[in-house]
Length: 425
Ligand code: F6P
Image (tube, rainbow, N blue to C red; front, top):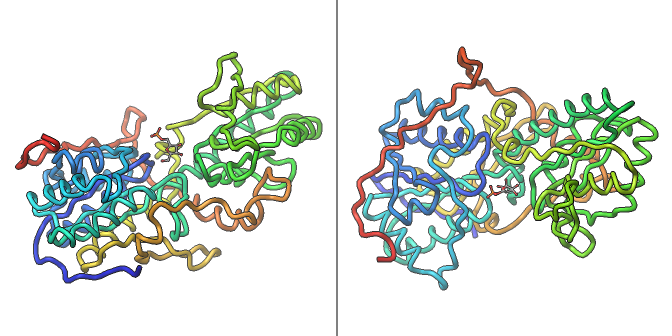
């Protein structure tokens, strides 16, 4: 399907919603949306907690926020309007939800819907773009890319990823300096667990911390490869014997040959508790049991995707740019598209934004290509480095107060008066 265009509605409001796991820069996208729409005289409503806010008619009037507050979104992590994990069923299975959304849109004269999320959200935006026509309501839907997992199809990279990649590379570098200092008499193995349930992009980014056999990370474990215990232990041992210490970066999505998440395979963590999540303690226990090395492990969890203090400038700029482009596309009458990032050069890195059909993005998952993972399965290749390196470049300015803390903004989030009965009553 190619991006469809319809004649733009003369007037109306724009609804913006955040969806799925939030990032250090998703609010930069919100700023891009709101500032671009304001510049064109269009009012932006935001849905409270993603699509749920639209279903519940819980809308926020962003025109009540000052220009300074909206500008401060550019450096504030988290989701300023709240997000949700909620996948709409298919049109056939739950048409009522789609009809409700159109009812809310109609009640508040919403003519443009911008959904900021990953592949599930692209699917929702696509479905809504189709049902508007069927129900005789002129609504244009634009998907806006976001996910730390970097697994959206078509776009070269996803806003949110560059910053988590930078945090991961920096943390790998810094923790490795620590373990190197301690290795003679104390810790020999450090294990960092990073996000990315099905794709190893974040784990791969740790590889930017160093290059060469002796530089950390010495092993990266990707969800794309089945975990090979014997090969893992052999490489950890060889590294400790050669270098004196070893840094391992593991994706939370590492699975065994049977396809089970390692942490769900009936294994026990370092405390003897059975693991329901957390691959790092499982690996640490294995290292201790089989090799006898002292270890430390870390699970940065939400720290990694909210670490605005270590955000990438490229990522922050791209996040803002996709928000602005989404407004341009919507107001130009486009429907069922997503602004995607197109890489036009590696060195110097250049990129541009283009519209791509949501149908090519919805429900697809982009994994690490085979030629990005080294032959032994534990590292990244030069091609991966070429791809990843530009995405973590530059630091994104962050104002700090006298108290030493970042000046993050908290919006007023003024509710729009409801006009409808509660959904489902
Ligand atoms: O949005 C992607 C992601 O950050 C994954 O990498 C991670 O597994 C997941 O979200 C965590 O989701 P939640 O915050 O809903 O627990």
